[in-house]
Amino acid sequence: MRNFISFIAITISLTLSINPSNAQGLTVKVITPNNKTDFCANQPITLVAQTDMGTDEVINFKWEGDLSIVEKNLGNILILKPNSKGIYTFTVFIKDNEGNEASSSVTINVKPIFKPILKLKNNRIEVEAKRNLPGCNFSYYIGNQMVNEDTFTKAKQPGKYYVLTTTPDGCTASSNMVEIQ
Image (cartoon, rainbow, N blue to C red; front, side):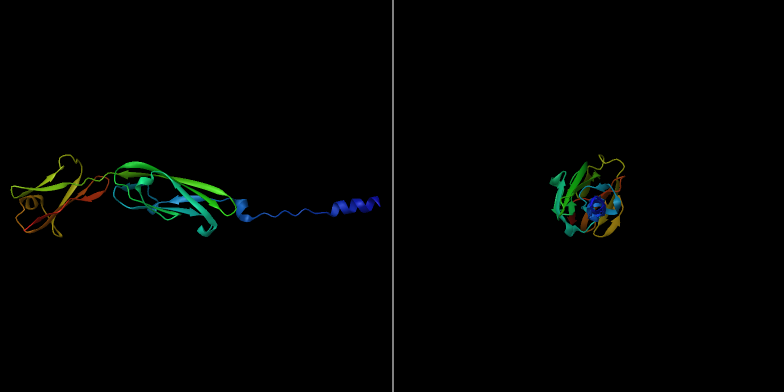
């Protein structure tokens, strides 16, 4: 009898079941356009929370950061449109059906743009703020045609006058438009 009980005790087995997704853990990464972190003001920026599982299995996406620059929150996608320069950090927190949680952060650097102001004075076009924009490149346009600065400021041709300003960082902005009849 004693050998029989010992035999029973030895043959009892333990079954342990592990869900592979729980064993590996939930992960998330915030992806930026072209994996860049430097952007220009007034440029839309799309942040995507990318997980190692389908977004259908994630039941909660929560973003934190300067939400005042968010144009649209689509859950795993956040569309930003910062109007001014600054350094912004965004963190996404996710939770799956099993209760697992993960988070990821990204910091972006938004560089300024310089928008010149055009004014018509004494039958000439003046570009205000030009002296205050060192290192910027100015491109002068009448309609869709690029012209030199002298032709532009004399304002002799009819058309819509505007200036594109490009900063040393590559950020571009358009001035207001002045129409000459």
